[in-house]
Amino acid sequence: MAVKGKKRRLGFWGEYRAAKYLRSRGYRIVARNFRCPFGEVDIIASKGDIVAFIEVKTRSDDAFGLPNESVRRDRRQRYVNCAKFYFSGKDIDCVVRFDVIEIFKGEINHIANAFEA
Image (cartoon, one colour):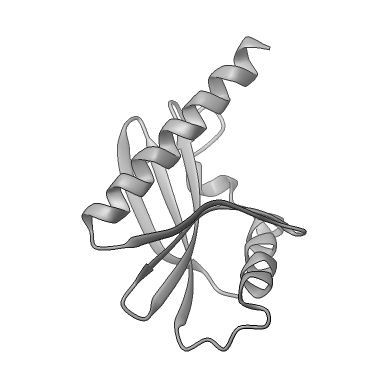
């Protein structure tokens, strides 16, 4: 149980750091932990005409690989489906982007346009 709680705290800390990082770069946080029938998006942020759906991966070591390596095809598809759900019934005029923010050993790496829809 302690490991699960530790991982959850690390994840929340990473999402907090990612949101703070995005704000410092001019992004507006539209939603955090957006839930829909297809899953959950960690952060939805906008800047200018871009709306970014952002997966945040936080790791304290590389025992299981780099953080961005864990964003596999099923997770990417879930994000695409969540974006479609988010925009359903709305008339949109923006660029939709899928980003990954990895936080590894305290360092932030923002991978803009990490994957395509």
